[in-house]
Amino acid sequence: MGVGHSRRVASFTESVDAFGDYLAARYSPRTRTSYGADLHQLAGFLTARGIDAPRDVTVKDVRAWLAWMSDEGKSRATIRRRLSSVRGFFAWACDHDLAAGDPTAGLQPIKVPRVLPTTISQAEAGQMMAAVSSIAEEAGSAVASRDRAIVEVLYATGLRVAELCSLDLNSIDRARELVRVVGKGDKERAVPIGRPALQAVDSWLRRRAEVTTAVSGNALFIGERAGARIDPRVVRRIVHRSLALVAGAPDAGPHGLRHAMATHLLEGGADLRSVQEVLGHSSIATTQIYTHVTSQRLREAFQQAHPRA
Image 1 (cartoon, helix red, strand yellow):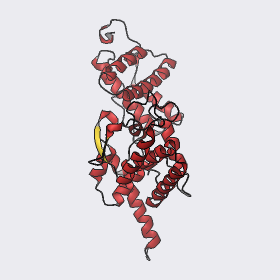
Image 2: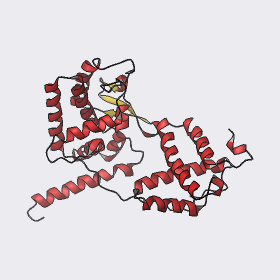
Image 3: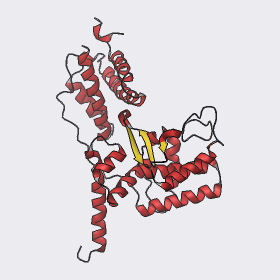
């Protein structure tokens, strides 16, 4: 619409939509959706305060928005992510003459306290895999075989749920025992995958034709009803159900398997840089939280076993 060259002052919603078009040409649909949700949420807050254009937003308005989210019980991580979206928007808005200045420029970065991730032990992981494998053998169904493969792949590779759901039939390189995955920021990486997970995938693929439909395409994992690419919600249900098979194991969810994989790699002697590459973290600082997990377990073992702990 040529927003930046219009004499009429563009509304916040119009500007956000134009920013969405800008993102669509450069980033993944998921990135655009995430930015859009954050910015439209801010737009609703500003509209309630009688503000309808980017050029009218002040640092006081942004601070009021941050305070409101805090009062609403939003986590620091959520607030920081939304503020990051707003910073990106106003940088673009200034470049397109939609804002006279950046109202977020004077704000201090929001510090998010590091919380040790909920995870499972190596023994619990082994028990879960044994239970899931046993169920798949007893059930003898395509769906049970698929569920086993999903849990094995998540634990073996540390993939995010969205990454697992996006895998295609050709994503797995059996000769090199790697999985090619497109992660955040559309960055592609190759992740090692163990033989147990490969065997589970092969068992699923031998049954996949039983649930495929015209919409299955090249998706590696598909749903049993419509045969379309599997939904992340289904994957989460599968993981929660699998973890419940192990007495005393925390209900860590799919991200817990990702945490477990990273923690167990470090416990096995892997270096931090390698774990960073496998997880697809852009910064090693994100990966370093797992050193806290392993250190905590080391302290617990010391306190339990050392005679002078």
